[in-house]
Amino acid sequence: MAERLDLLAQRARPDQILKHGILVLATLVALAPSVFMILTSLKSQQEYTFNKVGLPQDVVFEHFHNVLFDSGFLGWMVNSIILAAGAVALSTVVSCLGAYAIARMQFVGRGLLFSISTSLMAVPPVVMIVPLFVLYTQLSLISTYQGAIIIYAGLITPFSVYLLTSFFRTLPREIFESARIDGAGDFLILLKIVIPLSLPALLTLVVVNALYVWNDLLIAIIFLQDDAKRTLMAGISVFQGRYGDQIPLTMAGMAFASAPMVILYLAFQKHYIQGLMAGSIK
Amino acid sequence: MNHSSRFAPYLYVAPLVALLLFVFGYPLVRIFEFSFKMVRGIDGPWIGLRNYDLVLSQPLFWESVRHNLLLLLAVPFMVVWSLLIAVVLYERLKGWKLYRVVLFLPYILAIPIIAVVMKKMFQFNGPVNELLRWLSLDFLALDWIGSSDVALWTVMLLIIWRESALGIILFLARLLSLDESLIESAKLEGASWWQRLWYVIVPQMKVVIEFYVVVSVITILSAVFAYVFMIGGGRGGPGTSTMVVELYIFNALIRTSLPGIASAVSVLLFLVSLLLIVPLFAVRRRANEEEVG
Image (cartoon, rainbow over all chains, first blue to last red; front, side):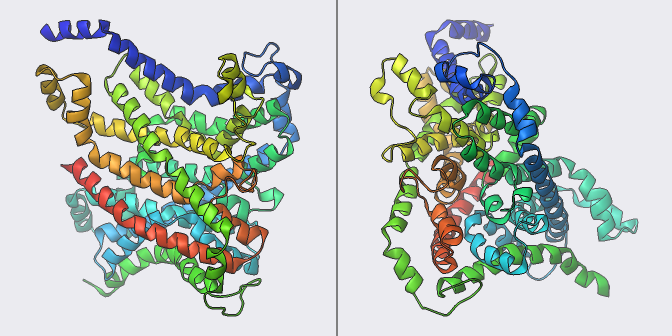
Protein backbone atom coordinates (compact mmCIF):
# COMPACT_ATOMS: atom_id res chain seq x y z
CA MET A 1 0.00 0.00 0.00
CA ALA A 2 2.75 2.38 0.99
CA GLU A 3 4.51 1.41 -2.21
CA ARG A 4 1.47 2.28 -4.27
CA LEU A 5 1.20 5.68 -2.63
CA ASP A 6 4.84 6.21 -3.34
CA LEU A 7 4.25 5.36 -6.99
CA LEU A 8 1.33 7.75 -7.20
CA ALA A 9 3.35 10.52 -5.65
CA GLN A 10 6.12 9.79 -8.08
CA ARG A 11 3.90 9.92 -11.10
CA ALA A 12 2.87 13.46 -10.34
CA ARG A 13 6.40 14.73 -9.89
CA PRO A 14 7.77 17.05 -12.56
CA ASP A 15 10.83 14.87 -13.15
CA GLN A 16 8.49 12.25 -14.64
CA ILE A 17 7.52 14.84 -17.22
CA LEU A 18 11.19 15.53 -17.86
CA LYS A 19 11.90 11.83 -18.35
CA HIS A 20 9.02 11.48 -20.78
CA GLY A 21 10.33 14.57 -22.52
CA ILE A 22 13.76 13.00 -22.96
CA LEU A 23 12.26 9.85 -24.45
CA VAL A 24 10.03 11.80 -26.80
CA LEU A 25 12.99 13.90 -27.94
CA ALA A 26 15.14 10.79 -28.49
CA THR A 27 12.30 9.17 -30.43
CA LEU A 28 11.93 12.22 -32.66
CA VAL A 29 15.67 12.22 -33.36
CA ALA A 30 15.65 8.48 -34.09
CA LEU A 31 12.64 8.69 -36.37
CA ALA A 32 13.28 12.00 -38.15
CA PRO A 33 15.26 10.57 -41.10
CA SER A 34 12.70 7.82 -41.72
CA VAL A 35 9.82 10.27 -41.52
CA PHE A 36 11.58 12.68 -43.88
CA MET A 37 12.34 9.81 -46.26
CA ILE A 38 8.75 8.59 -46.41
CA LEU A 39 7.10 12.03 -46.59
CA THR A 40 9.48 13.25 -49.27
CA SER A 41 9.07 10.10 -51.37
CA LEU A 42 5.37 10.96 -51.68
CA LYS A 43 5.92 14.53 -52.88
CA SER A 44 6.32 15.62 -56.47
CA GLN A 45 9.63 17.09 -57.56
CA GLN A 46 8.01 20.54 -57.81
CA GLU A 47 6.37 20.34 -54.42
CA TYR A 48 9.66 19.48 -52.73
CA THR A 49 11.22 22.76 -53.89
CA PHE A 50 8.83 24.79 -51.73
CA ASN A 51 7.66 22.19 -49.19
CA LYS A 52 10.65 20.42 -47.67
CA VAL A 53 9.47 19.75 -44.14
CA GLY A 54 5.69 19.49 -44.17
CA LEU A 55 3.24 16.76 -45.11
CA PRO A 56 2.76 16.22 -48.86
CA GLN A 57 -0.12 18.32 -50.18
CA ASP A 58 -0.58 16.05 -53.18
CA VAL A 59 0.42 12.47 -52.58
CA VAL A 60 2.12 10.96 -55.63
CA PHE A 61 3.23 7.36 -56.01
CA GLU A 62 5.04 7.79 -59.31
CA HIS A 63 8.49 7.74 -57.66
CA PHE A 64 7.85 4.27 -56.30
CA HIS A 65 6.63 3.21 -59.71
CA ASN A 66 9.83 4.55 -61.26
CA VAL A 67 12.04 2.90 -58.66
CA LEU A 68 10.35 -0.44 -59.23
CA PHE A 69 10.21 -0.44 -63.00
CA ASP A 70 12.77 2.04 -64.35
CA SER A 71 15.74 1.46 -62.10
CA GLY A 72 17.92 -1.46 -61.17
CA PHE A 73 16.54 -1.79 -57.65
CA LEU A 74 14.79 -5.13 -58.08
CA GLY A 75 17.82 -6.72 -59.71
CA TRP A 76 20.16 -5.33 -57.03
CA MET A 77 17.87 -6.67 -54.36
CA VAL A 78 17.89 -10.12 -55.92
CA ASN A 79 21.70 -10.02 -55.97
CA SER A 80 21.81 -9.04 -52.31
CA ILE A 81 19.46 -11.91 -51.45
CA ILE A 82 21.60 -14.41 -53.39
CA LEU A 83 24.79 -13.22 -51.67
CA ALA A 84 23.29 -13.11 -48.19
CA ALA A 85 21.68 -16.55 -48.58
CA GLY A 86 24.81 -18.10 -50.10
CA ALA A 87 27.24 -16.64 -47.59
CA VAL A 88 25.05 -17.39 -44.58
CA ALA A 89 24.41 -20.98 -45.74
CA LEU A 90 28.10 -21.66 -46.37
CA SER A 91 29.25 -20.06 -43.15
CA THR A 92 26.58 -21.81 -41.07
CA VAL A 93 27.51 -25.29 -42.34
CA VAL A 94 31.24 -24.70 -41.90
CA SER A 95 30.76 -23.14 -38.46
CA CYS A 96 28.42 -25.86 -37.17
CA LEU A 97 30.92 -28.57 -38.06
CA GLY A 98 33.87 -26.61 -36.68
CA ALA A 99 32.13 -25.43 -33.53
CA TYR A 100 30.87 -28.94 -32.79
CA ALA A 101 34.41 -30.30 -32.96
CA ILE A 102 35.79 -27.45 -30.83
CA ALA A 103 33.04 -27.78 -28.22
CA ARG A 104 32.70 -31.56 -28.05
CA MET A 105 35.82 -33.31 -29.37
CA GLN A 106 39.42 -33.67 -28.25
CA PHE A 107 42.14 -32.87 -30.73
CA VAL A 108 45.54 -31.21 -30.92
CA GLY A 109 45.30 -27.46 -31.56
CA ARG A 110 41.71 -27.12 -30.41
CA GLY A 111 42.33 -24.22 -28.04
CA LEU A 112 44.62 -22.51 -30.52
CA LEU A 113 42.08 -22.78 -33.34
CA PHE A 114 39.36 -21.28 -31.15
CA SER A 115 41.55 -18.39 -29.95
CA ILE A 116 42.73 -17.54 -33.46
CA SER A 117 39.23 -17.76 -34.90
CA THR A 118 37.86 -15.54 -32.13
CA SER A 119 40.64 -12.97 -32.50
CA LEU A 120 39.85 -12.64 -36.20
CA MET A 121 36.56 -10.96 -35.23
CA ALA A 122 38.53 -7.82 -34.41
CA VAL A 123 40.47 -7.66 -37.71
CA PRO A 124 38.95 -4.99 -39.97
CA PRO A 125 37.65 -6.41 -43.29
CA VAL A 126 39.43 -3.64 -45.21
CA VAL A 127 42.79 -5.20 -44.27
CA MET A 128 41.99 -8.31 -46.32
CA ILE A 129 40.85 -6.70 -49.55
CA VAL A 130 44.15 -5.95 -51.31
CA PRO A 131 45.51 -9.50 -51.72
CA LEU A 132 42.04 -10.91 -52.38
CA PHE A 133 41.43 -8.31 -55.08
CA VAL A 134 44.77 -9.10 -56.73
CA LEU A 135 44.10 -12.84 -56.51
CA TYR A 136 40.52 -12.52 -57.78
CA THR A 137 41.65 -10.42 -60.73
CA GLN A 138 44.12 -13.16 -61.60
CA LEU A 139 41.49 -15.91 -61.24
CA SER A 140 38.70 -13.90 -62.97
CA LEU A 141 36.59 -14.09 -59.83
CA ILE A 142 35.77 -10.37 -59.75
CA SER A 143 32.02 -9.82 -60.25
CA THR A 144 31.12 -13.44 -59.59
CA TYR A 145 28.63 -14.56 -56.97
CA GLN A 146 30.82 -17.45 -55.81
CA GLY A 147 33.84 -15.19 -55.31
CA ALA A 148 31.97 -12.68 -53.16
CA ILE A 149 30.08 -15.40 -51.28
CA ILE A 150 33.35 -17.00 -50.15
CA ILE A 151 34.68 -13.65 -48.87
CA TYR A 152 31.46 -12.80 -47.03
CA ALA A 153 31.22 -16.33 -45.60
CA GLY A 154 34.79 -16.04 -44.36
CA LEU A 155 34.24 -12.64 -42.77
CA ILE A 156 31.17 -13.75 -40.80
CA THR A 157 32.54 -17.16 -39.78
CA PRO A 158 34.71 -16.16 -36.77
CA PHE A 159 31.65 -14.71 -35.07
CA SER A 160 29.55 -17.76 -35.97
CA VAL A 161 32.16 -20.13 -34.54
CA TYR A 162 32.42 -18.05 -31.38
CA LEU A 163 28.67 -17.97 -30.82
CA LEU A 164 28.00 -21.62 -31.71
CA THR A 165 30.92 -22.98 -29.70
CA SER A 166 29.74 -21.07 -26.64
CA PHE A 167 26.23 -22.36 -27.20
CA PHE A 168 27.20 -26.00 -27.86
CA ARG A 169 29.21 -26.01 -24.64
CA THR A 170 26.10 -25.19 -22.63
CA LEU A 171 24.23 -28.27 -23.88
CA PRO A 172 24.01 -30.92 -21.12
CA ARG A 173 26.56 -33.70 -21.35
CA GLU A 174 23.97 -36.44 -20.64
CA ILE A 175 22.34 -35.92 -24.02
CA PHE A 176 25.55 -36.80 -25.79
CA GLU A 177 26.27 -39.77 -23.58
CA SER A 178 22.86 -41.33 -23.99
CA ALA A 179 22.94 -40.79 -27.76
CA ARG A 180 26.32 -42.47 -27.88
CA ILE A 181 25.05 -45.45 -25.90
CA ASP A 182 22.29 -45.76 -28.48
CA GLY A 183 25.05 -46.07 -31.05
CA ALA A 184 24.81 -42.67 -32.72
CA GLY A 185 27.96 -41.31 -34.34
CA ASP A 186 29.15 -37.73 -34.07
CA PHE A 187 27.61 -36.61 -37.31
CA LEU A 188 24.24 -38.07 -36.39
CA ILE A 189 24.40 -36.42 -32.96
CA LEU A 190 25.20 -33.07 -34.53
CA LEU A 191 22.44 -33.37 -37.11
CA LYS A 192 19.66 -34.91 -35.02
CA ILE A 193 20.33 -33.55 -31.54
CA VAL A 194 22.66 -30.57 -31.41
CA ILE A 195 21.25 -28.59 -34.31
CA PRO A 196 17.56 -28.95 -33.33
CA LEU A 197 18.46 -27.90 -29.78
CA SER A 198 20.40 -24.90 -31.09
CA LEU A 199 17.69 -23.46 -33.32
CA PRO A 200 17.30 -20.21 -31.32
CA ALA A 201 21.06 -19.57 -31.45
CA LEU A 202 21.13 -20.47 -35.15
CA LEU A 203 18.26 -18.11 -35.93
CA THR A 204 20.03 -15.28 -34.11
CA LEU A 205 23.18 -16.07 -36.04
CA VAL A 206 21.39 -16.11 -39.39
CA VAL A 207 19.81 -12.72 -38.61
CA VAL A 208 23.09 -11.03 -37.67
CA ASN A 209 25.06 -12.50 -40.53
CA ALA A 210 22.42 -11.85 -43.17
CA LEU A 211 22.19 -8.25 -41.98
CA TYR A 212 25.96 -7.89 -42.21
CA VAL A 213 26.08 -9.11 -45.81
CA TRP A 214 22.97 -7.17 -46.79
CA ASN A 215 24.31 -3.89 -45.35
CA ASP A 216 27.93 -4.18 -46.49
CA LEU A 217 29.23 -1.65 -48.96
CA LEU A 218 33.02 -2.15 -48.95
CA ILE A 219 33.24 -5.72 -50.31
CA ALA A 220 30.30 -5.12 -52.63
CA ILE A 221 31.79 -2.18 -54.52
CA ILE A 222 35.21 -3.77 -54.83
CA PHE A 223 34.33 -7.36 -55.72
CA LEU A 224 31.05 -6.90 -57.61
CA GLN A 225 31.72 -4.16 -60.10
CA ASP A 226 29.64 -5.51 -62.97
CA ASP A 227 26.23 -3.81 -63.05
CA ALA A 228 24.42 -7.15 -63.38
CA LYS A 229 26.01 -8.38 -60.13
CA ARG A 230 25.69 -5.20 -58.11
CA THR A 231 24.20 -5.45 -54.62
CA LEU A 232 21.53 -3.19 -53.22
CA MET A 233 23.98 -1.09 -51.18
CA ALA A 234 26.39 -0.65 -54.07
CA GLY A 235 23.41 0.10 -56.31
CA ILE A 236 22.31 2.83 -53.92
CA SER A 237 25.64 4.60 -54.24
CA VAL A 238 25.26 4.56 -58.02
CA PHE A 239 21.60 5.56 -57.86
CA GLN A 240 22.20 8.58 -55.62
CA GLY A 241 25.02 9.73 -57.87
CA ARG A 242 22.79 9.53 -60.92
CA TYR A 243 19.59 11.01 -59.48
CA GLY A 244 21.12 13.13 -56.71
CA ASP A 245 19.10 16.24 -57.58
CA GLN A 246 15.79 14.35 -57.77
CA ILE A 247 15.34 14.12 -54.05
CA PRO A 248 11.78 12.69 -53.88
CA LEU A 249 12.77 9.93 -56.32
CA THR A 250 15.93 9.21 -54.33
CA MET A 251 13.90 8.98 -51.12
CA ALA A 252 11.46 6.56 -52.74
CA GLY A 253 14.45 4.38 -53.63
CA MET A 254 15.76 4.53 -50.05
CA ALA A 255 12.32 3.75 -48.59
CA PHE A 256 11.98 0.77 -50.91
CA ALA A 257 15.49 -0.43 -50.08
CA SER A 258 15.02 -0.20 -46.33
CA ALA A 259 11.58 -1.84 -46.26
CA PRO A 260 12.70 -5.51 -46.14
CA MET A 261 14.98 -5.04 -43.13
CA VAL A 262 12.52 -2.84 -41.24
CA ILE A 263 9.72 -5.37 -41.80
CA LEU A 264 11.96 -8.23 -40.66
CA TYR A 265 13.02 -6.19 -37.65
CA LEU A 266 9.46 -5.50 -36.57
CA ALA A 267 8.58 -9.18 -37.08
CA PHE A 268 11.65 -10.62 -35.31
CA GLN A 269 12.57 -7.87 -32.83
CA LYS A 270 13.76 -10.26 -30.16
CA HIS A 271 16.20 -12.08 -32.43
CA TYR A 272 17.49 -8.89 -33.96
CA ILE A 273 18.17 -7.29 -30.62
CA GLN A 274 19.77 -10.38 -29.11
CA GLY A 275 21.74 -11.07 -32.24
CA LEU A 276 23.03 -7.56 -32.70
CA MET A 277 24.03 -7.37 -29.07
CA ALA A 278 25.93 -10.61 -29.38
CA GLY A 279 27.39 -9.46 -32.68
CA SER A 280 28.16 -5.92 -31.63
CA ILE A 281 31.77 -6.46 -32.48
CA LYS A 282 30.96 -6.51 -36.20
CA MET B 1 38.89 -45.25 -29.27
CA ASN B 2 39.07 -46.59 -32.79
CA HIS B 3 41.16 -45.44 -35.69
CA SER B 4 38.60 -43.33 -37.52
CA SER B 5 37.48 -41.27 -34.52
CA ARG B 6 41.03 -40.08 -33.86
CA PHE B 7 40.99 -38.30 -37.19
CA ALA B 8 37.33 -37.38 -37.14
CA PRO B 9 37.79 -34.01 -35.37
CA TYR B 10 40.14 -32.88 -38.11
CA LEU B 11 37.52 -33.67 -40.74
CA TYR B 12 35.03 -31.50 -38.86
CA VAL B 13 37.35 -28.52 -38.60
CA ALA B 14 38.92 -28.89 -42.07
CA PRO B 15 36.37 -26.70 -43.91
CA LEU B 16 36.62 -24.07 -41.18
CA VAL B 17 40.39 -24.00 -41.30
CA ALA B 18 40.36 -23.85 -45.11
CA LEU B 19 37.87 -20.96 -45.17
CA LEU B 20 39.74 -18.96 -42.51
CA LEU B 21 43.08 -19.57 -44.19
CA PHE B 22 41.71 -18.34 -47.50
CA VAL B 23 39.85 -15.24 -46.31
CA PHE B 24 42.12 -14.20 -43.41
CA GLY B 25 45.37 -16.23 -43.49
CA TYR B 26 46.34 -15.70 -47.09
CA PRO B 27 45.61 -11.94 -47.16
CA LEU B 28 47.31 -11.31 -43.82
CA VAL B 29 50.52 -12.94 -45.06
CA ARG B 30 50.27 -11.30 -48.44
CA ILE B 31 49.79 -7.69 -47.20
CA PHE B 32 53.14 -7.94 -45.42
CA GLU B 33 54.80 -9.29 -48.58
CA PHE B 34 53.13 -6.76 -50.90
CA SER B 35 54.00 -3.89 -48.58
CA PHE B 36 57.69 -4.47 -49.39
CA LYS B 37 57.14 -4.77 -53.13
CA MET B 38 56.31 -2.46 -55.99
CA VAL B 39 53.29 -4.41 -57.14
CA ARG B 40 52.13 -3.91 -60.70
CA GLY B 41 49.24 -6.15 -61.62
CA ILE B 42 49.83 -9.30 -59.61
CA ASP B 43 53.40 -9.01 -58.36
CA GLY B 44 56.54 -6.88 -58.55
CA PRO B 45 60.13 -6.41 -57.37
CA TRP B 46 61.17 -5.97 -53.74
CA ILE B 47 61.74 -2.35 -52.83
CA GLY B 48 62.34 -2.62 -49.10
CA LEU B 49 60.65 0.08 -47.06
CA ARG B 50 59.95 2.43 -49.95
CA ASN B 51 56.15 1.98 -49.74
CA TYR B 52 56.21 2.84 -46.06
CA ASP B 53 58.46 5.85 -46.68
CA LEU B 54 56.09 7.08 -49.32
CA VAL B 55 52.96 6.61 -47.22
CA LEU B 56 54.43 8.07 -44.06
CA SER B 57 55.71 11.14 -45.85
CA GLN B 58 52.40 11.83 -47.57
CA PRO B 59 50.26 14.56 -45.95
CA LEU B 60 47.06 12.90 -47.23
CA PHE B 61 47.82 9.75 -45.23
CA TRP B 62 48.30 11.74 -42.04
CA GLU B 63 45.18 13.74 -42.77
CA SER B 64 43.23 10.47 -43.06
CA VAL B 65 44.65 9.27 -39.74
CA ARG B 66 43.80 12.59 -38.14
CA HIS B 67 40.20 12.32 -39.37
CA ASN B 68 39.82 8.83 -37.85
CA LEU B 69 41.21 10.15 -34.58
CA LEU B 70 38.92 13.20 -34.65
CA LEU B 71 35.94 10.94 -35.18
CA LEU B 72 36.86 9.26 -31.88
CA LEU B 73 35.45 12.40 -30.24
CA ALA B 74 32.06 10.88 -31.02
CA VAL B 75 32.61 8.15 -28.42
CA PRO B 76 32.01 10.23 -25.24
CA PHE B 77 28.84 11.68 -26.77
CA MET B 78 27.65 8.21 -27.71
CA VAL B 79 28.30 6.92 -24.18
CA VAL B 80 26.58 9.81 -22.40
CA TRP B 81 23.57 9.91 -24.72
CA SER B 82 22.95 6.16 -24.70
CA LEU B 83 23.49 5.95 -20.96
CA LEU B 84 20.98 8.73 -20.38
CA ILE B 85 18.36 7.12 -22.60
CA ALA B 86 18.97 3.64 -21.19
CA VAL B 87 18.62 4.88 -17.62
CA VAL B 88 15.39 6.69 -18.42
CA LEU B 89 14.05 3.62 -20.24
CA TYR B 90 14.94 1.57 -17.17
CA GLU B 91 12.42 3.58 -15.16
CA ARG B 92 9.87 1.62 -17.18
CA LEU B 93 7.62 4.57 -17.80
CA LYS B 94 4.41 3.89 -19.65
CA GLY B 95 5.18 2.66 -23.16
CA TRP B 96 8.89 2.02 -22.56
CA LYS B 97 8.88 -1.15 -24.65
CA LEU B 98 7.56 0.75 -27.64
CA TYR B 99 10.23 3.44 -27.13
CA ARG B 100 12.82 0.69 -27.06
CA VAL B 101 11.70 -0.71 -30.42
CA VAL B 102 11.81 2.74 -32.03
CA LEU B 103 15.09 3.82 -30.45
CA PHE B 104 16.87 0.77 -31.86
CA LEU B 105 15.64 1.51 -35.38
CA PRO B 106 18.71 3.60 -36.39
CA TYR B 107 20.86 0.52 -35.97
CA ILE B 108 18.63 -1.54 -38.28
CA LEU B 109 18.78 0.86 -41.22
CA ALA B 110 21.75 0.23 -43.49
CA ILE B 111 24.49 2.87 -43.34
CA PRO B 112 24.41 3.70 -47.08
CA ILE B 113 20.64 4.25 -46.97
CA ILE B 114 20.71 6.44 -43.91
CA ALA B 115 23.73 8.37 -45.22
CA VAL B 116 21.87 9.24 -48.42
CA VAL B 117 18.83 10.40 -46.45
CA MET B 118 20.94 12.49 -44.08
CA LYS B 119 22.87 13.97 -46.97
CA LYS B 120 19.64 15.29 -48.43
CA MET B 121 18.36 16.48 -45.05
CA PHE B 122 21.55 18.40 -44.33
CA GLN B 123 21.85 20.08 -47.73
CA PHE B 124 22.46 23.82 -47.54
CA ASN B 125 18.88 24.50 -48.63
CA GLY B 126 17.53 21.34 -47.11
CA PRO B 127 14.94 20.75 -44.40
CA VAL B 128 17.36 20.87 -41.44
CA ASN B 129 18.57 24.34 -42.29
CA GLU B 130 15.05 25.46 -43.16
CA LEU B 131 13.97 24.37 -39.69
CA LEU B 132 16.95 26.10 -38.06
CA ARG B 133 16.21 29.35 -39.89
CA TRP B 134 12.57 29.10 -38.92
CA LEU B 135 13.72 28.82 -35.31
CA SER B 136 15.87 31.94 -35.91
CA LEU B 137 19.01 29.87 -35.41
CA ASP B 138 20.53 31.10 -38.67
CA PHE B 139 24.05 30.92 -37.31
CA LEU B 140 23.57 27.15 -37.05
CA ALA B 141 22.39 26.77 -40.63
CA LEU B 142 25.77 25.62 -41.90
CA ASP B 143 26.73 24.11 -45.21
CA TRP B 144 26.79 20.69 -43.52
CA ILE B 145 27.77 18.60 -46.53
CA GLY B 146 29.37 21.08 -48.92
CA SER B 147 31.83 22.85 -46.64
CA SER B 148 35.17 21.22 -46.01
CA ASP B 149 35.23 22.69 -42.50
CA VAL B 150 31.94 21.08 -41.50
CA ALA B 151 31.56 17.82 -43.45
CA LEU B 152 33.57 15.67 -41.03
CA TRP B 153 31.42 16.89 -38.13
CA THR B 154 28.32 15.95 -40.09
CA VAL B 155 29.77 12.46 -40.53
CA MET B 156 30.37 12.40 -36.79
CA LEU B 157 26.76 13.39 -36.07
CA LEU B 158 25.59 10.54 -38.27
CA ILE B 159 27.90 8.09 -36.48
CA ILE B 160 26.65 9.25 -33.07
CA TRP B 161 23.05 9.02 -34.26
CA ARG B 162 23.38 5.43 -35.46
CA GLU B 163 25.92 3.85 -33.10
CA SER B 164 24.19 5.22 -29.97
CA ALA B 165 21.31 2.86 -30.68
CA LEU B 166 23.62 -0.06 -29.96
CA GLY B 167 24.73 1.58 -26.71
CA ILE B 168 21.14 2.06 -25.60
CA ILE B 169 20.31 -1.61 -26.13
CA LEU B 170 23.53 -2.87 -24.50
CA PHE B 171 23.16 -0.60 -21.47
CA LEU B 172 19.46 -1.34 -21.07
CA ALA B 173 20.11 -5.10 -21.19
CA ARG B 174 22.69 -4.71 -18.43
CA LEU B 175 20.37 -2.52 -16.34
CA LEU B 176 17.55 -5.04 -16.61
CA SER B 177 19.90 -7.71 -15.24
CA LEU B 178 20.88 -5.66 -12.17
CA ASP B 179 19.80 -6.64 -8.69
CA GLU B 180 16.93 -4.27 -8.06
CA SER B 181 17.03 -4.60 -4.27
CA LEU B 182 20.15 -2.42 -4.16
CA ILE B 183 18.41 0.37 -6.02
CA GLU B 184 15.29 -0.04 -3.91
CA SER B 185 17.24 0.17 -0.67
CA ALA B 186 19.05 3.26 -1.89
CA LYS B 187 15.64 4.73 -2.63
CA LEU B 188 14.41 3.88 0.87
CA GLU B 189 17.45 5.51 2.38
CA GLY B 190 16.47 8.69 0.64
CA ALA B 191 19.02 8.79 -2.16
CA SER B 192 17.99 11.17 -4.91
CA TRP B 193 17.64 10.06 -8.55
CA TRP B 194 21.06 11.48 -9.41
CA GLN B 195 22.68 9.89 -6.36
CA ARG B 196 21.16 6.51 -7.24
CA LEU B 197 22.39 6.88 -10.80
CA TRP B 198 25.89 7.96 -9.89
CA TYR B 199 26.62 5.82 -6.82
CA VAL B 200 24.49 2.71 -7.40
CA ILE B 201 23.80 2.23 -11.10
CA VAL B 202 26.84 3.55 -12.98
CA PRO B 203 29.43 1.61 -10.91
CA GLN B 204 27.64 -1.62 -11.77
CA MET B 205 27.65 -0.69 -15.45
CA LYS B 206 31.38 -0.10 -15.59
CA VAL B 207 32.15 -3.27 -17.53
CA VAL B 208 29.45 -2.86 -20.17
CA ILE B 209 30.44 0.79 -20.66
CA GLU B 210 34.06 -0.26 -21.17
CA PHE B 211 32.95 -2.92 -23.62
CA TYR B 212 30.89 -0.41 -25.60
CA VAL B 213 33.80 2.08 -25.64
CA VAL B 214 36.25 -0.51 -26.98
CA VAL B 215 33.80 -1.74 -29.63
CA SER B 216 33.08 1.86 -30.68
CA VAL B 217 36.77 2.71 -30.92
CA ILE B 218 37.31 -0.31 -33.17
CA THR B 219 34.32 0.69 -35.30
CA ILE B 220 35.50 4.26 -35.72
CA LEU B 221 39.09 3.36 -36.52
CA SER B 222 38.28 0.57 -38.95
CA ALA B 223 34.63 0.45 -40.02
CA VAL B 224 33.41 3.89 -41.09
CA PHE B 225 33.96 3.32 -44.80
CA ALA B 226 30.26 3.25 -45.70
CA TYR B 227 29.53 6.53 -43.87
CA VAL B 228 32.37 8.39 -45.48
CA PHE B 229 31.97 6.88 -48.91
CA MET B 230 28.34 8.00 -49.15
CA ILE B 231 28.63 11.42 -47.48
CA GLY B 232 31.88 12.34 -49.20
CA GLY B 233 30.67 11.40 -52.69
CA GLY B 234 32.98 8.38 -52.90
CA ARG B 235 36.11 10.50 -52.63
CA GLY B 236 36.21 11.73 -49.07
CA GLY B 237 35.06 15.14 -50.20
CA PRO B 238 34.58 18.02 -50.24
CA GLY B 239 38.28 18.13 -51.06
CA THR B 240 39.87 15.63 -48.74
CA SER B 241 37.93 16.75 -45.69
CA THR B 242 36.29 13.38 -44.95
CA MET B 243 39.16 11.14 -46.09
CA VAL B 244 39.77 8.25 -43.68
CA VAL B 245 42.28 5.38 -43.59
CA GLU B 246 39.89 2.82 -45.10
CA LEU B 247 39.13 5.11 -48.01
CA TYR B 248 42.85 5.73 -48.44
CA ILE B 249 43.38 1.97 -48.87
CA PHE B 250 40.41 1.76 -51.23
CA ASN B 251 41.72 4.62 -53.36
CA ALA B 252 45.26 3.25 -53.50
CA LEU B 253 43.93 -0.15 -54.59
CA ILE B 254 41.08 0.73 -56.95
CA ARG B 255 41.62 4.29 -58.19
CA THR B 256 45.40 4.52 -58.46
CA SER B 257 46.13 0.76 -58.78
CA LEU B 258 48.97 0.73 -56.26
CA PRO B 259 48.48 -2.52 -54.29
CA GLY B 260 51.88 -2.09 -52.63
CA ILE B 261 50.92 1.25 -51.11
CA ALA B 262 47.47 -0.08 -50.16
CA SER B 263 49.15 -3.06 -48.48
CA ALA B 264 51.54 -0.89 -46.46
CA VAL B 265 48.57 1.02 -45.03
CA SER B 266 46.70 -2.26 -44.48
CA VAL B 267 49.65 -3.55 -42.45
CA LEU B 268 49.61 -0.42 -40.29
CA LEU B 269 45.85 -0.69 -39.74
CA PHE B 270 46.21 -4.40 -38.94
CA LEU B 271 48.85 -3.65 -36.31
CA VAL B 272 46.55 -1.08 -34.70
CA SER B 273 43.71 -3.60 -34.66
CA LEU B 274 46.03 -6.12 -32.98
CA LEU B 275 46.66 -3.57 -30.23
CA LEU B 276 42.91 -3.23 -29.76
CA ILE B 277 42.28 -6.99 -29.55
CA VAL B 278 43.87 -7.14 -26.08
CA PRO B 279 41.49 -4.66 -24.38
CA LEU B 280 38.58 -6.09 -26.37
CA PHE B 281 39.13 -9.58 -25.03
CA ALA B 282 39.73 -8.33 -21.52
CA VAL B 283 36.40 -6.48 -21.42
CA ARG B 284 34.58 -9.26 -23.24
CA ARG B 285 35.77 -11.80 -20.68
CA ARG B 286 34.79 -9.57 -17.78
CA ALA B 287 31.39 -8.91 -19.34
CA ASN B 288 30.81 -12.66 -19.69
CA GLU B 289 31.88 -13.29 -16.09
CA GLU B 290 29.47 -10.65 -14.90
CA GLU B 291 26.66 -12.26 -16.83
CA VAL B 292 27.39 -15.64 -15.27
CA GLY B 293 28.04 -14.29 -11.78
